[in-house]
Length: 315
Image 1 (cartoon, one colour):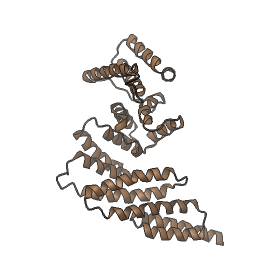
Image 2: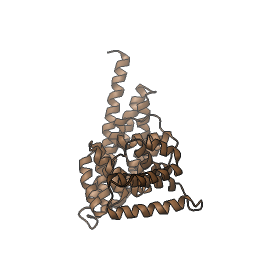
Image 3: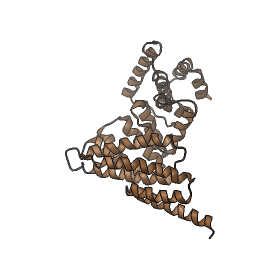
Image 4: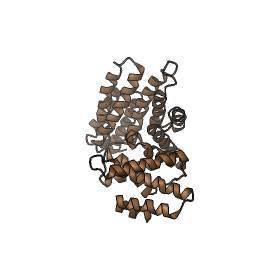
């Protein structure tokens, strides 16, 4: 083995060791491994990226241990993970193995904190159960996460945050139809209540990236996900509405249509939500065998709101 090969082997071993240390929260020890790797290969992008990650979490780990309350500790880690995601956006070189290792520690530690609340007065609190489900999801245990999200869904029906989490998990276990159903329901109810940053399945990530390439950013991006989800054939599972749902849909359309005509009331949510509701209305008309005249009327409304969306929808 030549010198270059020996260096590559040493660097790979030290990176692997650092990632194992990440899983255990031993960030200072991981830094030592990575600094040794950097001495052997000073321009290795993965080592540099991993060092940044180790420094980020070493600082947070110290603050985490100063928090006494279990719920607050878990919440702190959730908040810092969201901050870490923003931190990663500024770093051109991020590596899946390192991120996976960090997830095992962050969500594993938060899981322990939230599970400690199960036997107490907050044991049946859907907010706690949702966080436990989110921890299992973060660790990649999607079936276990689904169990907790399903319990939450029974306790808090029609919660967009819970429905989107269910959808994401179903997508990960290749239950595509269920994923599409839950994503469509969640984004119909209220896109702004969904934590977009927590959605990681390829199905929804591809759609989000495509919208970002089109120039959409928060908070508008979430509103257009259900619209382009239909147009791009991602959220293409349709159903007939119950009579009460149909009545609420018509009422919502009337309200949004009035809002669209009033510059003082119109905002970034008005157009995409109205378009999405017309999509649902057309789906209902077709599923229930209603007249073609009603479908054509809804299509004309879509055309008046956004001609390019109309053209994409009918072709």
